[in-house]
Amino acid sequence: MFHQKFKSFLTLLLFVMFLANCSPTLQDRLRIYNSALKYFKKGNEALSRGVYHDAVVNYRKAVQIDPSSAEFHYNLGLAYYHAELYVQAKKAFQRSLQFAKKSPETYYNLALVHYQLGEDTDAHEAYENYQNLMQIQNPAAVQGLMSPPQPSLMNTQTALKIQQN
Image 1 (spheres, helix red, strand yellow):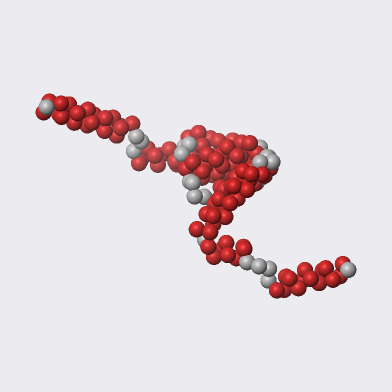
Image 2 (cartoon, rainbow, N blue to C red):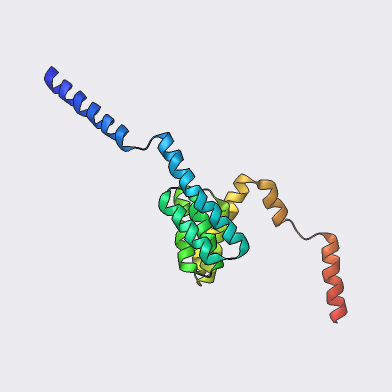
């Protein structure tokens, strides 16, 4: 009995030691992130200049180095979207959501991609997710977006209708 418990304990200890050696340390993780960050920054520069092909190339390098960064996948999706590569943009945004499930911006852009692809049901669902997350994260902003038109705007609209008649 003692021998069996000792054997189980030893097996568990060896397994834990194996896992500890397989998982990257915090320093390794930081080194990987910083290596990918230089390509991410180059991608940001290219995206801001409207050179979408270069942005895609640099973001893809960042993702290859650090595939677990939601931000890298998100910006890759933006670059693909601006390059009108909607299928790739969709995949990048979906991958980003695997790492940051509560990102309203990602759901918003995913809704735009679905719309561009003619996927109306998916676009509606992604937009609903965006609205729900915005309601949770920033209820005041959502209330402002959903408030009725201001009286001055309503008067302007009424005036335009009168002028047309």
